[in-house]
Image (tube, rainbow, N blue to C red):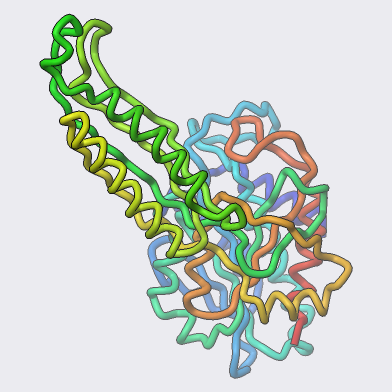
Length: 367
């Protein structure tokens, strides 16, 4: 089985594609599934669902994401990307490999299974949230899906370790854009201007202070800005400034509080500087929270295999959309490597995929 996992992973690693534009990847998936007795469904653009219909009333599902990243690979491996400027730098090739290999295990266990099985190969996890389009298609309802399982390769955990937590697992991620408009003037006549750079800096420090002091320490959240652009020359007051950052939360109450307080901070600075603010927050993907009842069931069936994580990750995952339909269980599969996700030298030993497949097989057999 390890040889098959390695073949799948290395084949897929060479053909990374982006977003919903996945013709080679979907062709490969369809070809790999063609030897199994399953029905291939296409509920949304580039999505593939393999439905193993055993005539049961309910279905359980397993999800793999298919898209890569716009990164030029620098590993020099013989199986490196053949698509210039594109790379499977987030491990989605490993996710697909495990779920493809699970198809063989489904066939071998078909007489013992109490439910039908669906394998979901999903586009656009890295961008628009392809999970949402699959949920909205109605296919999960039509096929009576009652549980969905998924995972993500995780460099920080020891190789082969399954890490998860009850409830909050991965954050809601919202982009924050702040546009500040002032009035330019020569610095020798600074009083004639309205300093957008100063206003933006004042907003930044006040927003950070607000997030740090007004939200209780035990509430998981993050507000950080990575971009601040302003000004054109060193001897003129800046007429415009632009900040861009990210808000990560798990609770709507936290999101609403931070949004409201940023608007209030901006209003105070407007009155004191003469600048104007426009603040926009994207809705982002929902937070990913493991369904408590399903989590407890999995832990009871696999008590010695799950490392309970102390804190959630502040990264985001569109797997959260599936929780709008039914209970979900999501876990991290440890790689035990120093290289980070989303980097041009990301790679891992495929032997960890065997550990992931074995855990998926146990999830498959839970009544």
